[in-house]
Length: 150
Image (cartoon, rainbow, N blue to C red; front, side, top):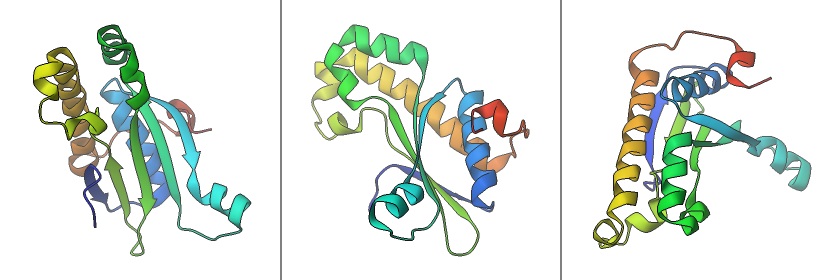
């Protein structure tokens, strides 16, 4: 399996894991901007049955604002993408892309854009804490409406 970002597996059914992911992000100040149901999309467009798989687009308001003020073109690689998908054994995988992942491969980018590097590090820390919440503590269940899933 390729390394597309930080990955955790939680011993939760898909629906509960999705709610907990959104809640954990919210608790770190990360807002979910959109939700894309991949399974539904593939069913409608290709009539292909696929496992439950949802993509979330998320951002931290202040870090997004700071990044755009530093470089307007950075918007092309915002926001963060989070994949949530069910595994065969009843568990759920959560994969979070690294902030500014397309430019991280360029080793010189930190020197060229130190302000963006600092912002990427801050966002990465928030995401790591959110993933840690999923693994080490069950977020308080606030219900689907509280986290924008209704």
